[in-house]
Length: 168
Image (cartoon, rainbow, N blue to C red):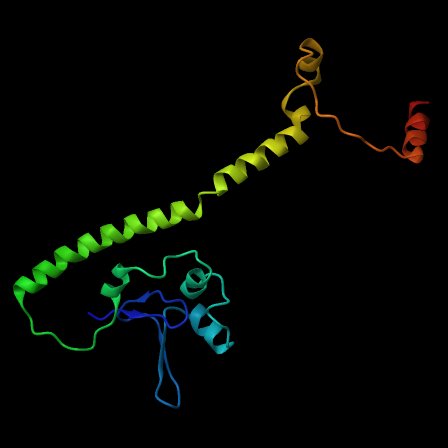
């Protein structure tokens, strides 16, 4: 069973699935779904479309250079069947996938390293700006150690005149 790669998004195409386009110069393009085929016909560059593997690799979101990718490479040379070789290959595939998953997790952790501190700073800033929504004003009167952040609010004359008119 031969698994092909989509020309546009690099996802796996299983037998009986996808679309195949053959250009006049006999170059074969395989697409996993109509979305990829339509984007190809619109002459879009896969490196500029955010959901493709090419974009993710180019912008450092996925791993690009790793020895585990060497095993996915397409080989056109036929191999003579050997039962022992097939058995060791299947065992190796399991090990390789385990190694790849670990390396991808490490890559993801490195990418997200600074995000936690950034999210914490944003949360603290948001809390400082809207502390009055979290704690009731009565709490601040009971415990003077708790204070609201000092904020200046500009009120125009028109609004204050309208408020006085409404009170009367």
